[in-house]
Length: 221
Image (cartoon, rainbow, N blue to C red; front, side, top):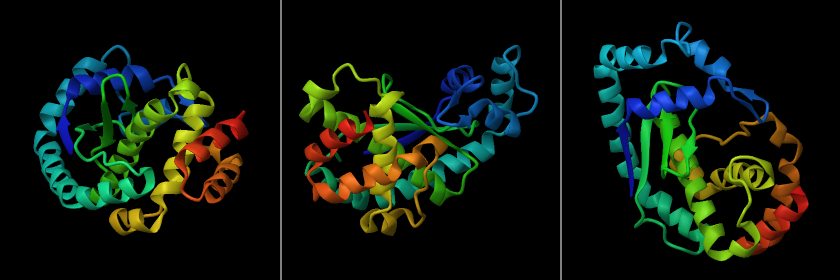
């Protein structure tokens, strides 16, 4: 089950985590300042509190709309996921929050992700499903390939690279495109160089997830 809420305190954490972060060829601080030119490390707490107060109606409307859309589409989404992983993940709760920052992170330790509230509803849905697949991918790897992935960093390096590229491959499959109705593109420029290698591993795996993950991690080494 997927549920989206509001959490301004998590946005404060996101600001601190991303304001000076550059990763995979993306400058997240630049993205924050583009939408919020007056926010800074000195005023971010007051700024975020004020923003939530001043934009409460818009945030609430966005929240209601995306929860309604997610409710309509998630049965089809989890069915498509089951076809890929050969497991049913629909009974687990996946928690997300709307964010005033266009960073869209997932906090694996907190079991929560964020989606930028000013995106269109359809694009918010795409981001939500993208993030949920991250959680599912890592859960699957821990359960089935623990001897290989234990100790690997989920936020950088080849394990993270694979999770991001895998999402692009999977969300562009027909079953998912029928749901999100928008092409999933490579977000991190550095991944464009290695995408074709992993896509070929997916095609060669013939749907065998364990084979695909093992061989992809070797290739990324």
